[in-house]
Length: 193
Image (cartoon, rainbow, N blue to C red):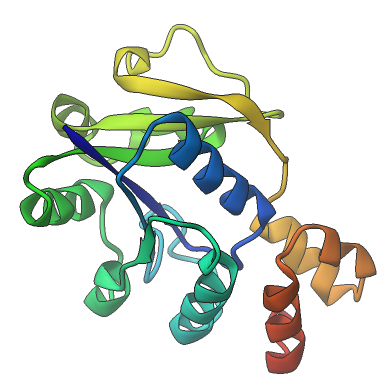
C-alpha cells in the first residue's frame, strides 16, 4: 500500500529541523508522498501572532523546493479558522483513499497527543511518524506507542520561537537554523521584527 505523510504546523517560519524531519521520513519510511499543511492558526495556540499566511506559504515553498515527493496544501489556510488534526486527516483520507495516511510530528507534539481533539478517533484510523527531538524524550508508557513509527535519527533542537527571538535581536546565528532563501526572504519582508 502507498504511504502518505501529512506534516502540519504553523511553519512560522519553516526551519532546518522541519526539513530534516521531512527528509528522514521520506528516506526511512518509503513514503510515496509528503504534504506540508500549514495551519491558518493552531487550535492550541490561538493567542499567538503569526506571520501572514502568504509569507509562511512562500517560505515553505522556498525551503521545500528541493525535497522530492513533497507538496504544499492550503487546505487549513483556506478555512480561515483553526482546524483540528482529525479534520485535516479525514480530508486527505477522502482524497487519497488508497493510501495509508501518517501524521509526521516531533516528539514534543507526541508528548501532548492526549490533549488533541478526538485523539482516540485519530488513533483508530491513522498512524504517526515521530521524530525524536533531543529535549523531548519519548515516554515509554504512552498509550499511543503502538500506532507510532519512530525516526532513528535525532532532530536538531530548533524552535520557531527561538528563531523569532534571534531575528528580533538581530543575531546573525539565525542563519544556522534556516534555509538561505528563507533567511533572505525574512530580511526582505522584515518579518518578525
